[in-house]
Image (tube, rainbow, N blue to C red; front, side):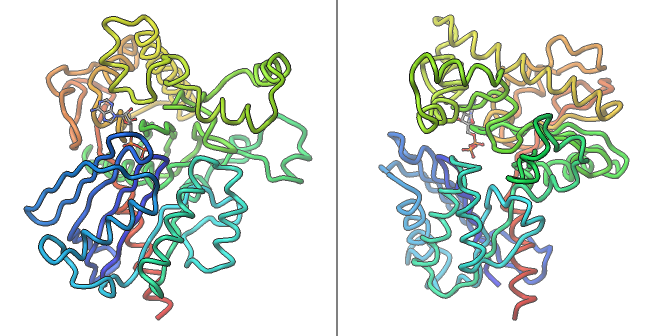
Length: 401
Ligand code: ADP
């Protein structure tokens, strides 16, 4: 069975085509990413066997990105499929499944309607996910599609971690609670961390730090997520590319009143104009901020905020876990930025951690970045959400047949 896994992020589409004979097989026959969608200078990457293709092309939206992906997979010269009919199933990462979905499901009209209802809870993510599902339905008609939800892995949060201290009736009326996101990523890297440490996941206390344009940390005890930084929506928690993360909620009311803003405008400010972009005034991409840091105070300040806020969460999760064996860094920033990684752990020596500068040069591959004698292990583990989505897609589609 050929399973195409599609992961539509806010500005990226990642894809992997798996040939699977069994649920846990992971034979990747082609993969790649379309980056900076809707931003100038879109990069398109495609890897299949020893072919490694990088192109630059203007890609305005996710639908056009998926058209390019299907075209290249079936290209007579460099493709791996003769025809789209050789795609047997498609698995999608879907960000918000509400309380309704605590596991993956086959996509049908009813499920898609619920995903649409959840879109207001994840305004940057469910809309691209839905576009991806609809585009695949049109480009590869009749193929079964599966949704794997980011919220599902955090279904193990204890009640005291997911209830907010606001009137309880809002939980009862509107299901306002912490859901958490990036679940497939946290689950994947936690499993890999246990393997790298030569331990059983059930014996470990971990903090997993997913740091891409969206950022979320999770406290993982015995393989279960017991707390996570994103909440009712992906807006809570750490500072992100364009999202503010934790702020005093009264700031929102104050700005709205002072500037005469409506909720839609305020939502845009918090989700699209804040975070790295908001503080730096330069870009939402930390690469641009690192480049600007030597000459611009606000770029340096942005990097300080990122590290300081990350440190505070690691400290808080150390407390709720009752100790800490390992910290995992993943996603765009976690996998690449030696500078940000180092600055997060500067000053945490009392946790028993020292970063090895030589090891900390690692990029986009697995490796320890703490010194060999560091009691607390720090690892870089490239996330592979697609690898978690393929087995669920295979399982649900074969069960159905
Ligand atoms: P998404 O969250 O959209 O799926 P990623 O996980 O790929 O995206 O993260 C994208 C972010 O990672 C970029 O906005 C950028 O801030 C950061 N990033 C990617 N590569 C690097 C790099 N080489 N150095 C520093 N930051 C990087």
